[in-house]
Amino acid sequence: MPVSRELQLPSGDKIPTVGFGTWTVWQGGEGEIYRAVKEAIKVGYRHIDCAWVYKNQEEVGQAIKESIDEGAVKRDDLFVTTKVWDTAHRRDAVKENLKQSLVQLGLSYVNLLLVHYPVSFKDGDDPFPKDNDGNIIFAYHDIVDTWKGMEDCVDADLARNIGLSNFNHLQVQRIIDASRIRPSVIQLEINPLFSNSQLVEYCQKRNIHVTAYAPLGAPNRPWKTKDEPDLLEEPVVKQLASAKGKTPAQIVLRCLLQRGIIIIPKSSTPARIKENFELFDTELNDDEMKQMAALDRNLRVYIEPIAANHPEYPFNDF
Ligand SMILES: NC(=O)c1ccc[n+]([C@@H]2O[C@H](COP(=O)([O-])OP(=O)(O)OC[C@H]3O[C@@H](n4cnc5c(N)ncnc54)[C@H](OP(=O)(O)O)[C@@H]3O)[C@@H](O)[C@H]2O)c1
Image 1 (cartoon, rainbow, N blue to C red):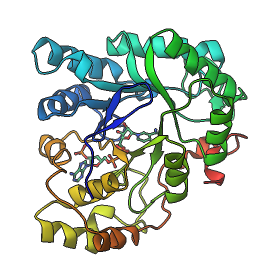
Image 2 (cartoon, rainbow, N blue to C red):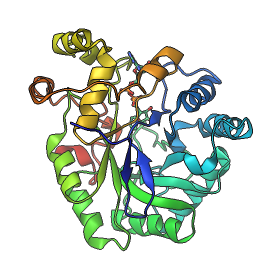
Image 3 (cartoon, rainbow, N blue to C red):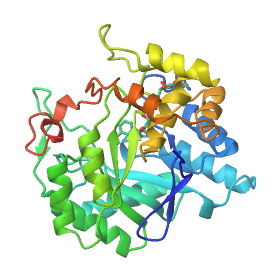
């Protein structure tokens, strides 16, 4: 199946199908993401996935600025995404949160702004406000009102495109029904162990492009239990990799691209950054795609337990 390097958005913009993830909490270290993004741009990535809550947008911004100054890329050729965090869901807080991201990134606009989660936390600068018992203090903003704030950001030329992340199909439909500017992209956890097919198809049928986060199954997550399978060690993945002269990660990423899904793998390792970008010289046939589909274990790894009691907690439905 042929795979496009870019997908068209209703605004006329094009989103590169292979992007670069920038969230890292378990390794971290100052400068890690700065170095990774610089390397990614050098290798050819033009789509960079960021978020206010990742607390590293200054590093991303520094890497972008230096890459532009050195002539490695032009701003117009980059597709930068950021996300509005749960503590900024009041309509007028959305734009303020984006403005903070823009200052951190050193940009005057983002190509794509997403609502990070449908749940809202108490407004303010603390991303995880807690009560004396250590529980998150929720807020109860209407997601439609938050969406109006997203549309305001397009009107103000601060975001070229807007979309959602971690919304279930009922929440997606509520936004579609109430929107003046429709969501054009949704970012969801997707990989062969968690195919998320129902929601992917629901969104794709409604002309919402789907981006897979944790496309490799977040193999180094510190909360991984011994019982949970390691996607990159699955026999079928290794077998297809060796048959095609590719790596397990390349097989997994290629499989997602062939489902029409945008991918944003994260790596801080130069060889892997390059490897994860070299996906257009191989192909999985129908039978191989079926073998990959059979890996589905409905294994969600980002379950966001701190928000489980919120009425907008998304993961009790598809
Ligand atoms: N919207 C949301 O709620 C949400 C949630 C989670 C993530 N995201 C976004 O999605 C991006 C990707 O998700 P993720 O970082 O959780 O998971 P991921 O991309 O599935 O996995 C990243 C991990 O895989 C390792 N890795 C990368 N390439 C590899 C390769 N070729 N072979 C073996 N291991 C490899 C990396 O290690 P090294 O770095 O050591 O190479 C890193 O530890 C994030 O960075 C973030 O931008 C969004």
